[in-house]
Length: 421
Image 1 (tube, rainbow, N blue to C red):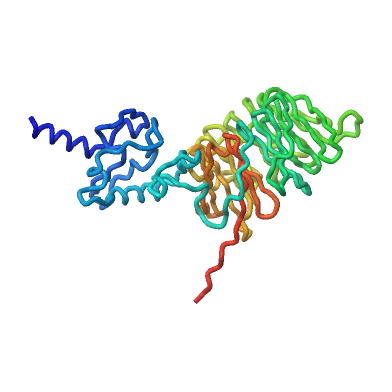
Image 2: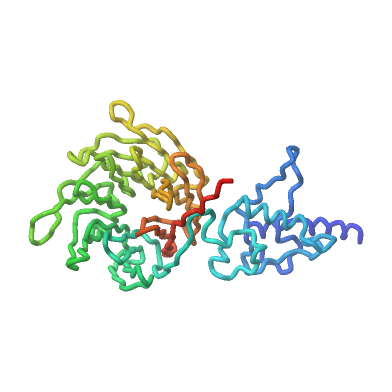
């Protein structure tokens, strides 16, 4: 009996708790290990590292993990041996930020299996964190020549930040979700339910642009026209007016999408719109007529940007597609990049050396950075929740806003040149 019990205890002591792996173990002490054990080497010489992805190194019931016996953890000689090597391999192959470190309560320090950093890569760094919004940040705007940063959120507020002090200078409570926010010249445009608010930052005048049905999810400006995509699939277009009661006049309603318009972009004298109906439509900005519909995505088209002579689109189908004009003026996909998760948004900007960098925010609380046109990975930014948008700032600054309401300020750094020998 004692021999059978000893064998059973030995098997248990070398087995990882399946409930701990799923983040549901509530036993203290637990008979099984609360740490991953090294897998036996495979025939090709590599161990099975599938456990490195999607597993939780922390117990869900406490901040401090409940491990098995000290002998099982450290080995017969009292050192960490294979366990340390496994932790290092985990950290290298799974660049995910520690959710406990984010909240300042991770107790493992350098032994933690997850990253204790807001980014990975060279040539950029964090400047400060502005966490005043309570919900998703849906717009960031820095008007040209202004020292004030504007941010909008579904918490119903627009916050105005002093760029010199980093402090919130003013809070505007709109009493309704802010679903988009952009700036153009002296104007701030705020997308709301069934309307767009227009604020002139010089005269402090305010106007309401009616017409949209449902939430205004996307806005852009091109050819002296403000375009706003609404939840009913219609894109509204306003141009300047000489009327005393409003400086804007509704000139067109662009119909064609069957579901909400969620992204807009302007380039090559065209307006591009992406929708929850999984399509991209191309509109002539002079005639405001749809010239073509692109149907290569298989899920919501989440973001559109124009880079050089190309159109880049992203989708919840986990792909980024690069489109180029071919003969007869039609657009075709010339390259498809696939992410591990759905793509939330795209943004492009040059780094400190002028190299074009594509930011791809994914459904894993991170932003992947790629050099264009090669799509070689440059680095990665991390956030509390999915990054809803990215915006260019003055000088070498740029901003990210995530779904927790966290606004991060980043700075490009010049990478030291290596002296040739």
